[in-house]
Amino acid sequence: MTMEFEKIADILKALADPTRLKILSLLRIRDCCVCELVPIFNISQPAISKHLSRLKTAELVRETRKGQWVFYSINEKRLEEIRYALSHLPDLSEELRELEQQGLTVICE
Amino acid sequence: MTMEFEKIADILKALADPTRLKILSLLRIRDCCVCELVPIFNISQPAISKHLSRLKTAELVRETRKGQWVFYSINEKRLEEIRYALSHLPDLSEELRELEQQGLTVICE
DNA sequence: TGCATAAATAACAATATGGTTATATGGTTT
DNA sequence: AAACCATATAACCATATTGTTATTTATGCA
Image 1 (cartoon, rainbow over the protein chains, first blue to last red):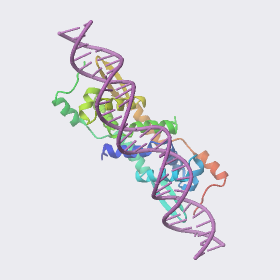
Image 2 (image 1 turned 90 degrees about the horizontal axis):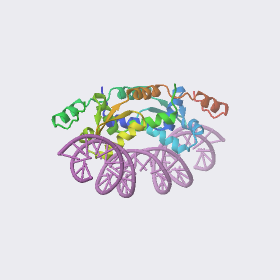
Image 3 (image 1 turned 90 degrees about the vertical axis):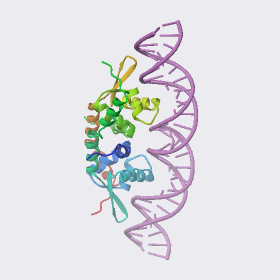
Image 4 (image 1 turned 30 degrees about the vertical axis):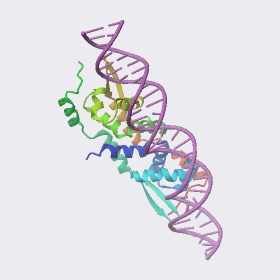
């Protein structure tokens, strides 16, 4: 089932940051809590927290509270969805056909 | 071969826009020149031109001049590379091991 | 040569992004 | 209850992004 361009772009925006990609790569090894992630990066705790929040909104990670810690886990299914979406972008044949009907196409042989 | 986090993020940023995704989807049907793309979108010619330039920098498209027109074509190989990169992000086991050596890990059973 | 068309670049404006520090919230422990 | 620790949120700032209009560059043709 095809995802809308806007939706795909939103998820890609959540992915398109080196810190967030690194977080996802770490979560592939095992679930981590925020305080474990902080010392790995050269940025503040609130910055990490915001990156995680962005990933959560895009459903790329899930959170589970364990006592005073919040553990994050990767949602591989979502990553698979976005990989699939890149191979199967919405079809725009109709738009191209309309363009041709309006005589706006350029043919260079 | 693994791509750096920064590099992957750069290509994802080029992808992470609905207009650019739509352009790529159109180029999957056939090569198009700028003047064909403009009437499909509700934005100006320079805006389309800049989107194409962004895609070209990320090597997601290639351009070929044909007379006064510049035709753009999709680089499917690059799209395949980014899909592969999402499945095979750089390994950070070493960073996690260092964290454990410094006693910074949190274990909740 | 001079003009028309296609595309790129320049200069600018509004909004989004990614960081900071300070503070609030939620849960644990003494 | 009070202090403590982990995390989230607020307010703010610098830079990046994405659009605009005006202009420049490149090509084709009368």
